[in-house]
Image: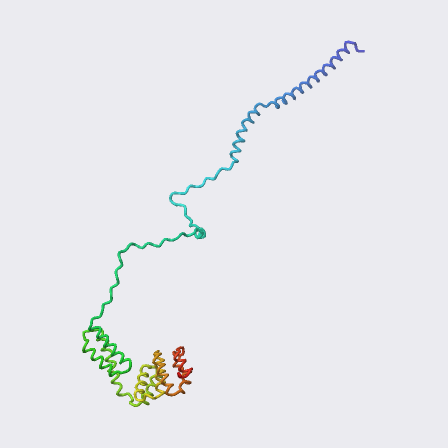
Length: 281
């Protein structure tokens, strides 16, 4: 049997390990608590947070939209000017336009007055008109004599004298050709119809007029002369000859109503009266 002292020593040895285990447990607990306290008080962390605040302001500034810088126009190329739209131009009410001012001019020069003919020139013109009237009527012999007198009396009026010589030559040529013309009225009428069908209304008129000088009562010749004058546009003389023809032979009224030679007279009141209404009274 063990002695009492041995039992005490055994009891002490058992208690000592227990204490050492408890001590180790308390040390471990202290070790675990110390890091927690140091983690709870991280002084450098406060400084880092303080330093991070300016970074947040910088981030806020970086997030704010900055106005885009437009490129400055170069000196060489000027910006193009766009024309204003046409509608905008038209919308503006136009004010009263002042009349364009013409440059100041001096007093207008009066037009030169036409030169008055001299006494000799006036007499020459009057003689020419009388001779030309006979020429137009077909009186070539009378016209020839008048043109000859004009050239003797007014040879100094060169312009009128030159025209007179031209008509004198024509009149003499016509008189020379008269020798070959027929002498009786019927032959002259036939020649006039030939010239009219050929389209030479001036020659036809001359033939009919010559025929009427030899036979003034020939109704057909008056009618043919009226048709020829209508073709030439001589309205008044054509109506006069037609009225003479119908007066001599009323049967010609029906013929005149459809004759194409009188187309130019159909709108004339006198033609309507003579052809469609009958004679007066």
